[in-house]
Length: 230
Image (cartoon, rainbow, N blue to C red; front, side, top):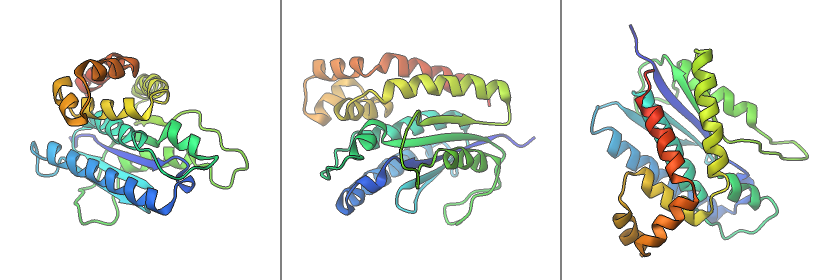
């Protein structure tokens, strides 16, 4: 029996509000985050993870193990939310509040390789379709209600994980750029001492910011998700 795989489809919220240099810098940060994920996840399997940036403001990721997808999704979201663009515009508040919109799709996938231009299968179709439904281009008034989604072929699983992601979404969308930077390192499983040294701030400040950003709830949710069977 073929095991389920997972895919992430994502796009940057209000990317048009960012200047060219901002997008270049943010894209470089996203690429570095994807490379870090690949280096970490591919230690376990030769084809456990692939990630790529598409059309400049969109991201696609493939996971051999669906349980790896949520931590990766939150890593990418906090990476983007931690970025402070130089460009100032009316729409920048949407970018600052939400950063990245992501959907996790779970299902069967055809073999995926890093050189293929097209990924085919249920997982990428489900994640991509959900993101397409959220697109706001051409609308006179842009309203973002949520940015994290889950879709599979199991209605009960969808209800469970979509509810979980809705709660995480509520917590993350209230986090500041500084808090998201700390959450990013926490999601990398770094200790507060390591984060303190890396970000050149006191360990007590790291603890305070992560507590204010709701890390305890996020960590519990991740533990639950990663222990589930797909």
